[in-house]
Length: 252
Image (cartoon, rainbow, N blue to C red; front, side, top):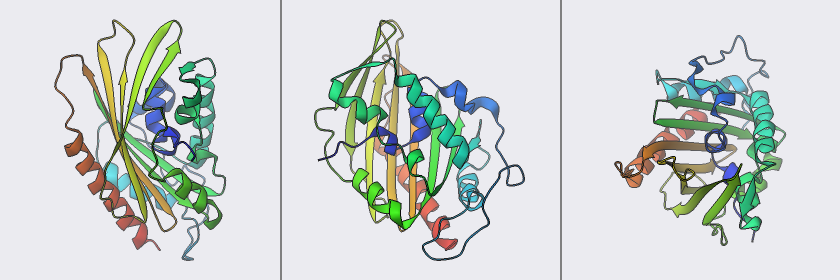
């Protein structure tokens, strides 16, 4: 049984949790437009890959006029994925077998695919939309990574970074996302001693036809502060993921 990789889920969220938000430029408020992004021509075949421009339209609709909105497209994401992996090179992870859960298979490595990530961010939270249009040959890979298996002893992971410990707890959630295959999870990250902060990430993701969608919220809170209503967040994420699938289907 293959362990599920956290990076199959929300790539941009992984940047947040890895401390790479500055690299992703969440706060820039500048999103690439179709005129500045090199995109393949739109396609219409039922099993063809959608273009960056088509996927971007869906992400832009979901983002609306959200604060701190930023969009990354296929080539940008591949470059960011490599940068993020390098961030983990010097990180010691316990249990050691769980390294793949945090740094394993990335959807940015799928080759023949179109990928767009849109993120909005406030001072204490962020929402990430990830849309990927896949070639038929890549579907089995994604299906395998979305299998509803356990995290196989990696529900609690400790990262040792520059003499400090970061604790992560992973929990599988139930979702009624209208997709061929779907899953959801909650990742709670507690900062090093003395930081007094916790990050709660809730994510829903699914595969429908040749399109993969994930929607993720990350909420930062101080110890003893108001708890995140996970079910309420999950409901909102599911609603937005369903909107994304409907918009993508209309382009076929």
